[in-house]
Image (tube, helix red, strand yellow):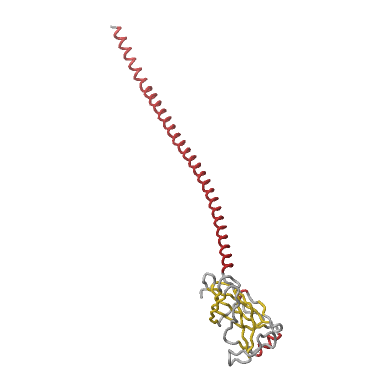
Length: 264
């Protein structure tokens, strides 16, 4: 009987001990599980950060490579642009050389004043031809003899001659008297004398001023002709007449002398 009592006590004690140790064991298991989960989370977080770092590194390398490619492309484009510019300049020079060689070119072989004693008959020139010195004529005309010094055929279309009395020409030319002309000159040809209506008349006061007060008789205007590509070009000119020597001397502002394409 006493043995059964001791056996009962031993079983009861064992159950109490197991009951006390069970929560601790469960707690240990839970803690171990939590540690495992935390470790896995840390491993997972570290893995994500490592992947981001790897991606960032790869992106940096790719950006660096792309920048290098862009620099190389810029170098090639710069070289290509320089090559194109050089080629364009060479082409432009070739075109200019071709135009200079093949285009017609006009120059004035001779210029002169012709005196008219009266203007009742403009076709009758009965004064000095040419006027070489003083006295300054009252009625006169300015004549131009063109020459083609280019290779292509020179076709003259218009002539404009203006007269001005003063110490110098105005800053801007004024054109009003334009005459239509149809003259064709081959290479080396010297054309006929070209003149324009009407006869120019000087007042007595102007004639006295030109004779010795530092005032000049200025001649300016332009000649229209066809260029190499059938474009209309205007050749501007300006000169002053010296009453002592009777010669013509180039002068005046740069706006009066040009050789340029025009639309009309």
